[in-house]
Length: 460
Image 1 (cartoon, helix red, strand yellow):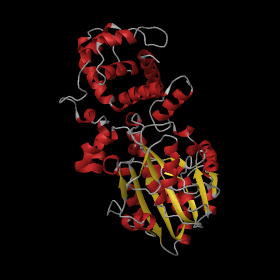
Image 2 (cartoon, helix red, strand yellow):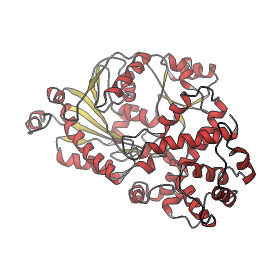
Image 3 (cartoon, one colour):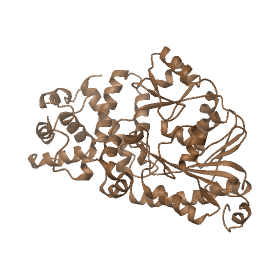
Image 4 (cartoon, one colour):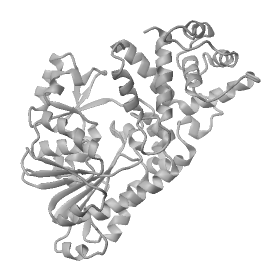
């Protein structure tokens, strides 16, 4: 691809991401990008890397690019102006890559596969922004950290004095982590197999299953992936699955299983012994787990489609599980490194709806836990209102569930020194090198199942 063709492709991808609109039902940026590249097999690895670098640069610096565009547009009097994908790409190329106007003229020439020629106002923007630094002392705080102003109070509450360091880490590209499938191999053997394919890895610092990949190889094309020796999974997600504490022979419910990533990890920890029920309200997402389960050699997972968090199946399974994992629907703020566009599609109304849904899921799924069993609440959110506030409200409403201190849970599950002395586990990019995760573990006290079964309306 020529530089101009890559620029045009980036504009098309950004337009497709923007066309997804606002709200929780939209496709994330990584899904849009992967779909675009898969449908165009002619895009080689080097072009793909350059294309993705430009797309994600625009997404990660969107607020600052928009600030600079607004700053420069005053000189483009009477010229048509809008904050769209094309102008953001122009700003990114001028500021982040230092393109002079002459380079724009060559790439924006309107020939096949290239962007149409620059308009007078766009030419002015390119000239005014070329060579600028992305930072500027007059930028408001939300612009400097590329985050909507309405989210800043919650994020400051979460990070305190580490706010700027963590926000900077959230603006970086996420590493690629693998989980070694211990049903088929061990970490040392998996590293050797990957190395034989030219892939260099480093053992994770927290998860005993984790390998961090150097670079961005085409992992699905590797024999190690096809044979189920490894799965792509952030180290933080691996830890959340490990902290469920599932042992061989147990009955486990993965209540919001999605495509089954944590079910796969739990099954490996259980050595394929026992029974896991992977539940979700999305039938297609559950169905997509079928291939992954087969590839991993997992055969103790049952998939169950639920109509809602109050599906009648729940009432028939009261107190039937040793472990219940709630990987709750959430804002996904902890995964902004992977989907930076989500900063701008999340709304305050989304948070209100998610908090209500999380509370309903907690109240309903808790009834599945047997006396002496454990309930594990997980989000990939950084917002206290989805995490601490949620589990504290649950604890107040369900006194039969006792919060377990995270150091104890960690020691039992991993046998190593925990990274926290708090009751809950809070993982973050800057401090732990993982996506942002929250994990809380509760234990159900004996002789409490009947009392909660009698609550009217639950499970109907």
